[in-house]
Image (cartoon, rainbow, N blue to C red; front, top):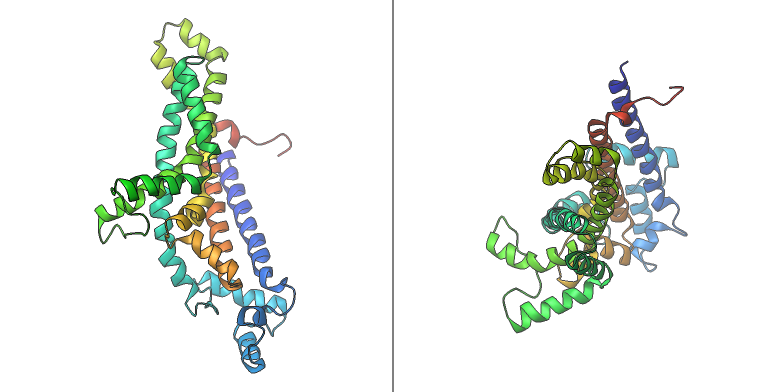
Length: 321
């Protein structure tokens, strides 16, 4: 087997094993709850007959290995069961909430990547200048200011005083795109603060390190233009670690931004997670943890593949392989 094929095979195998292990831990969420999980979800005053019937419906009266097999088989077929608290199909709840979160978090991450790279490059290429110091102070402040406070200030300024934007709520872009843009502006902005700050600082640090490397000095010695040296050679290698930083945001992309959704009353994944925890809706928590974990693992798998394509040295076998 070639080195490339072996690299891909190992990445696939590791991802599958990780998903299996995580599914076992997620399954044990209900099993490890102190006391009777069904009675906790239904309430201490629930009739014993109802509790016993629900326990049988959830297969909790069977041996644990059998329970796991039934549960994982249903999950593979897209069946997460039914929420005992909200009396709704869990898969339908996820299908309803996930697009809402994606419509907020995906634009926020896109803005963070574009502006973060731009600010990081400007700061690195103008190191020590007034613009470098000003932008560094701004991105550092963005990372430190509480998101909910910024959200409240934006609501007061743009919603109450200027009346440009709605204070809260969400509009489906497929129904009214203009209304979606107005309702999403403030949540997208405050969601982008943290990632933008992290990406900008990382790009600046990487860029400063790379532009002092020997091959960059060699490129300059060959008479290449400064723009070509910076953006064709330095920036390309600077962005490789940034891919990891962006992938680390997948959890928040899929799981939603709890603070933004709470401040602006958006019914996304973040609020669903919080409501499920507060309501002790363990079946929904179980499903959400598994879905988010699997998506993160798949993104990490794609990250490994992209790394292997960007840097062939990663695909090389270790000594002894």
